[in-house]
Image (tube, rainbow over all chains, first blue to last red; front, side):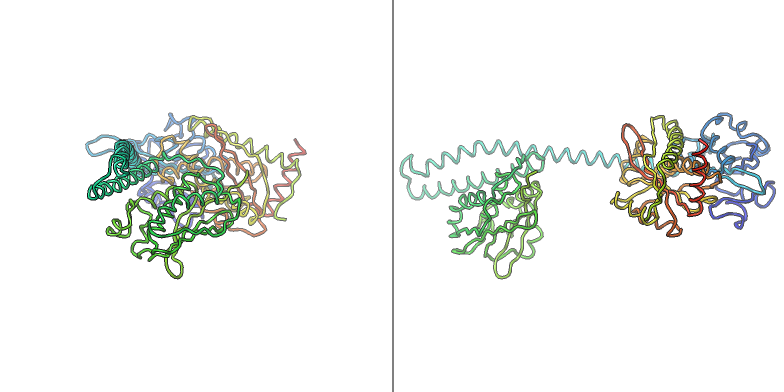
Length: 401
Length: 204
């Protein structure tokens, strides 16, 4: 680096620079890993270290004593000359970065095989005062390895970005494929359900009991298949961002009463009744009515499925600042511990054997979570004291703007 | 308290002087990147250090990044140029054109930001030195980041020291990016500064 440390002030500027190169300081400068040269107030180069000799192929005796602009005629009037003048005239220190000044000095290193390559440079220009005279120290750092490293980084980052785009593309294709297939499946299935329904109802003539039983099984499973396809369609809409939401003010009590009524028959299958606790009239939330109903239907039907026979499901509405919490509480056996962490994941049900017993696709809560989050809400569950589970959704109160 | 009252005339004069030097810094940058760059100083204040730090954090909850240079001579302390971190990122990437799609500046990009800061801070410091008719020597630029308070606590100095607090508009590709330049002024140099200012105003 620079000469005797005691002559370097706290900003790294040398106060004294040895002039003759045969001096010890000169030898030190010659060992520097940076290019160093010194310009005096007459703009003459008075020091030229070994690094500069090697990189410029200009001998010390040809450079020292010559004017800067004679050594580098191409740099006359360029920024590097301006900042050297500023260092000498106003003692201003400057940095010339590699990125904003491509290859400032004509400096090269020789590669194996004899080919020459231009050195990528970062240049600092610092004023030095010594015994009443002004000098300017120019230091050149070879940043070629750093530039190469960042070129590699740039390529890698671009590749990563492209890979991400491809993955998103593939995922979009998958969603679109799922959506198309589901649509195509739904149409014939709807007519199968219609036909089976007609046969089951007896309008085509009275059925023998064993045929009636088989038709009933076919009807139930067709129904389940349709639910499954509708859920898959919802999932693919959510994943491709195509699920539309019409957000607006929704009267909460009206929606809750409608959902309860729609689930009444389903609840009766499990001998479960829904009980809505007090809701303040005119409580208005900001939501999409149909989607909110879909979430409530999912929570209400789940609660019925997992309730013991003859027990009520409680529905509570609690105001929390600008949010409304809707709680659906069942008194069932609760959620198994190991299942709690993945309850909102796709195709998750507590265990396979349950599926057959209670029905359902295992997609409902995943869809509900996506819907609630789209409406800027939160879905979750609590384990209350005593028996059962509370599922809740927090959604925003509607605010007049 | 916490602020030094200066007359409208004094404020106008400083603002004009600074805008002229910012204009020349912008010209240098424009030529380097071959693109229209504008720099202006819409506001100048003299604030106590703690007040300035708070002002930063209030205005910018986000982290700031920028460039600092140490000054010696007529002024001792740090000169800072700061932008909200993501703005620094966009300034460098607009100016360099060739971008690395990563979330923070690479070493080479930090170095480029240092040069941009060096050009701007040198022009501010030299116009202040001209006003003082004294010499201020500044060190090479260094890239820094942190919250307003962190960046100010890096500085050493008396609690009574004042900060010359400049708002800077960096105009690039029809975007206007707001940043700040701050210079530490000890009380003595501030009095010098004001009296030189009055002298020049009456001479003008």
